[in-house]
Length: 156
Image (cartoon, rainbow, N blue to C red; front, side, top):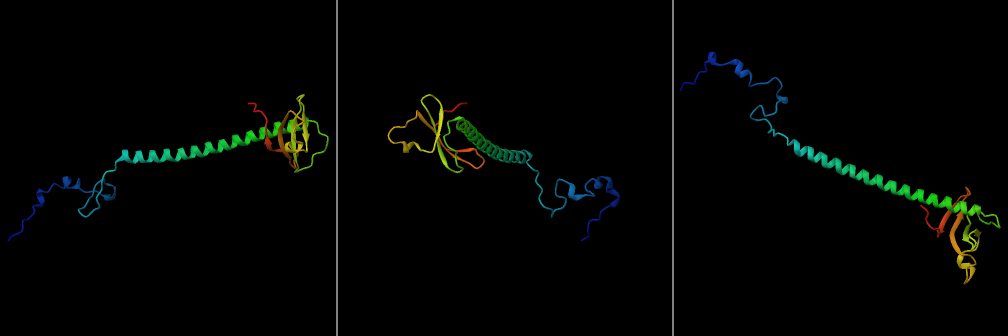
C-alpha cells in the first residue's frame, strides 16, 4: 500500500498562515484538539449578578447609616431635654446647694414657677403640694443634670 503523497506546491501558504497564531492564549476558541473548552461568557448574566450584589451591599450600608442617624437623633433629643430641664432647674427656686450625684425632683407650682426639691413625689404623702412633678434628675460632676424621669410636655 502506497501512502498518499502531499504535493507541497499546491499548498497555499498564505491561507494556511491565517489558521495559526503567534499568541494562542489570546484567541477566543480552543486552538488544539486537546485544549480546554472555551465558552463565550454571558455578559448580561455577569452584569446582572454584579448589579444585584452592588444593590445588596449598598442597601445594607444605607440601612446601617439610617440606624446611625436614628441613634444620633435620639441622642440629640436627649441632649435637648437635658438642656431644657437644666435651664428650668437653674431658673427655679433653690433653697439648698445641690450635691453632685444626688437625685432631686423638679416641681411646677400652681403659679407656674418651678421648685427643686430633695423630696420625691411619693414622699409627700397623699396630696402633692405642687401642681405637677416635672422631672427627677441627678446632678452630674460637670453641673449638668441627668434626666432620670420626666413628665415634660414636648415642644417641637
